[in-house]
Image 1 (spheres, rainbow, N blue to C red):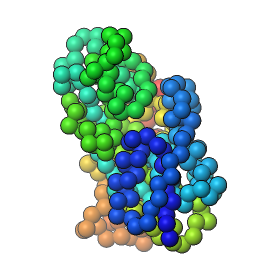
Image 2 (image 1 turned 60 degrees about the vertical axis):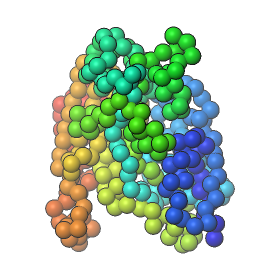
Image 3 (image 1 turned 90 degrees about the vertical axis):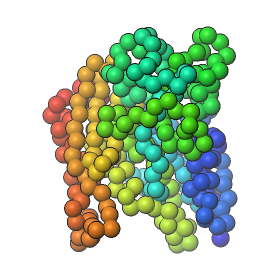
Image 4 (image 1 turned 135 degrees about the vertical axis):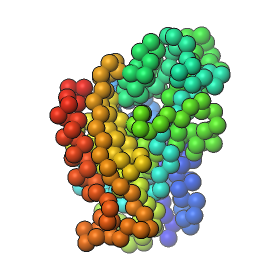
Length: 312
């Protein structure tokens, strides 16, 4: 059987899908163009979460492909009636990175430095750390963004730095260009950042299900699930200034005012699966907390401290 796998056609999407499927025999990649790939508008104006997902799911449901690969942070949190999230493969680095001109770190940037990002969360985090910055809304692939720092076409396009996902740079072999890796405790990222998601039709044949299920990583599924539940319970999307990350066995969530002037933060221990953790009857290892319960505790703390007003 040849497994037909749908993916976006960007250099990053192709690189991460090829790496994921490197050890899977008889694979055919099928590129699919989404509305998010065609438009140059900001992600927030396009509707945020799901803008890169619909075309891939349409190809899956039409039978053009057997499975589709997404960046998990692009997926809506609501389940789909006909599509199943069958595999969350081992996660790459979930951190954000700063790429600064001349190797500058965030603290080194001059007053009024122009920093590019298309993410409201990153905008808020940048302004919270450095209220003096000029944060510019940008779109484009990784090469386009890096070029504006390293070799801009005109002075108007010049950026002093950009903030990107470490996983994307690494998958393109360009992580060495990062000036600074931003710590997840102080700088939580998008829920499920660094993770991929592989979906199949709910009525997929056993051979397809077996091939895809073999890619699943339980530790990644556990962490990404907790992060995505926070996003779902807050009814927020990728346009919301919200960071949620699991790091050091703890779920960390922070909501921001868009101008960075205020933030609300909550944390709770999640635990991490390990060889010494024996599974209990409910499938949760001894010493671990249930991801849904932990996420609900974090959301309750955020709402108690006023996060709804920041995310609305």
